[in-house]
Length: 382
Ligand SMILES: [Zn+2]
Image (cartoon, rainbow, N blue to C red; front, side, top):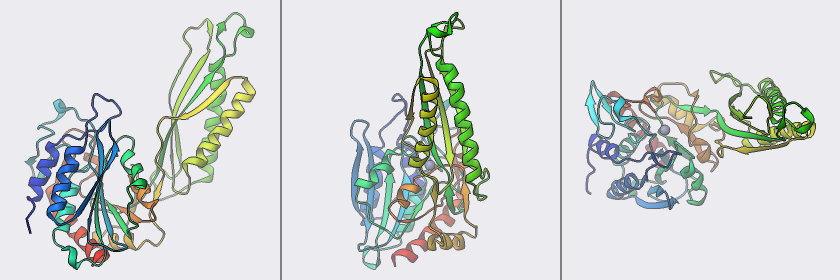
């Protein structure tokens, strides 16, 4: 059977293929080159590859590669996109893999192109014929922005595997929990008028004052009702992040808009939270006679918690020697958990190095992670 390039050569190729995802079109880049490269390596190892178009216009794709057949099995999952970077703030070219001080520098080395060569190195040790359950390698688009790749999994026909590992950089520690994220806006439309006579208008700014009280009140309620000590901030949070309204001191403010985020713990869901917010929003509309509208700034990401008594988490704990913990960043895990797949987040590299200049993957994380993945494949697929 044909052999793959070394882990280092693979990572160098992946880093050299830009796949920035950004909400700003000027920075946004297709991930197709990365997908095609991964597809080629997977095919070399005997995987059957399916490439799914997520967004035709922006050329965003997912890849699902399958080795072996039958029910169950294990998914090794990662995202192919990176955040944008500021090359002038890097010590080396972010698109050229650079080895220095026992570290591999480059954009995406830890978050998380680096996961794929490690997953392939583990997969390379197995042949399709010896697998009793399939091994999947899943590569997604746009995790760093809209998570549109993970959202498209519903139509990818992702099989119901027994377990999934998402190889985000966790320093080889299993992560079994993260908060969910919502970002919402409330727009209030009143009536502008001359400030000398309040009857000439209806101030959106004053209505927003009431709205903010309602939202902070809701925050307090949520924090009293929901708590999980696994998180360093154990309660849900709400941040009123920005506000725009009015134009002149002598004019009654006709429109005011507030943007806020909500980070919520497992057990709370986006739909229910939006209902609670809407209830408050309508209350303000009724009491102020303004028009109040809430809309999402993005679709949101649900909170994630591994299955209770998860076999996968126990196995990950024993292989890594670390107890599972919660993290402060969101991942694609809730989308896989949604498919009733037992899911854990665990990978090489540290999130501290992600999303900033001189991102790196420490060389000493590579072999331990390949060994963990190899043991996982043996457990779930042999
Ligand atoms: Zn990531």
